[in-house]
Length: 399
Image 1 (tube, rainbow, N blue to C red):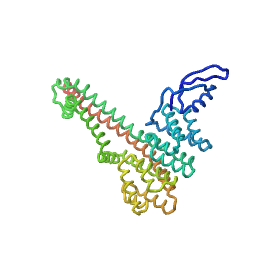
Image 2: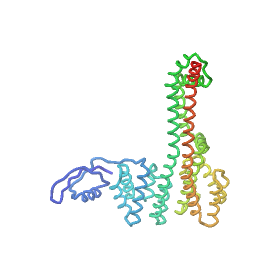
Image 3: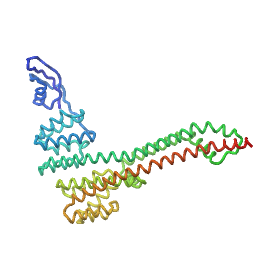
Image 4: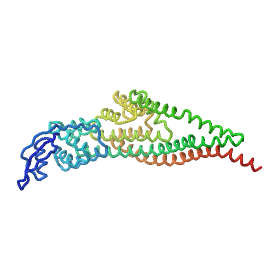
């Protein structure tokens, strides 16, 4: 895109001038016509090329949904992208639609234009769009992509819902405990020692823990933060470390099984979508491997794909991987025998989608009383350790 300085006239012959972004001069002329102006002269002030590296998923879904509706209605791709540029929700969305328009106008296909924005569109999306262009089923393919992206957005929301609540409660419990250890307990130590009574073991433990946090609390916090940063850096740099982290995520109690179901549901949905679009099975498995965010699942898909390439059936290839439960293998075998593999994969995705909703509800229902009980036990122990010696002293004074 470029920034133009223009001079134009109104219907009444009045002169107007200003600045406007446009792909080229004919585009500028058409924009001014919609404003009721007739272009007289224009010159480029500065090139305006912005590279869109990231766009919110919901805005991507909105753009693809509108594109699907326009293409289904018979609107040419260039006109559709022009309208989407004008109706974009954000400057990044406007630049994205304009960039796609410019690349297609320069001779690229929609699939190639989409592939030029890897931070916005995945390789799976660009490959599906290419298949839609070849088969002439572009509206249907775009509809499948939009449906899949909406579902993935719902999965992301479910994952956040699953992890945020326990993380928040754990943070609150930790903050309360540290406050009591650093503020309340030190103020009561002098009073408790001045009572002249023998301090119980649980109170001694509480005082010792409080003193330990006072002396080494900051060092412990810095060490934990450094350990976390080192782990994140190593996981980002080395696949072996990231594999251990992802394996640990799947092994977490309560949360791990739900994360595994989310990964399996995403795999089944992506494979079904690509199989329906006519993409060869081995290529579809490669893209499914890329879509999965968990290295454990990626490794299992890659090994199953290698077995399929070597002549094994799809169900047999996945049956050798312990990560995939019998339900998945059984449904794949049924899909192979009946010739309705996409239907079988859709059923797998539907089953896990429903199970994920129920599992998230169950995990939250279990975590809430467990964390509440933990906080109650912690506060009860502190109160008992503090009030116990006071109660004993009062009992001695009465006698």
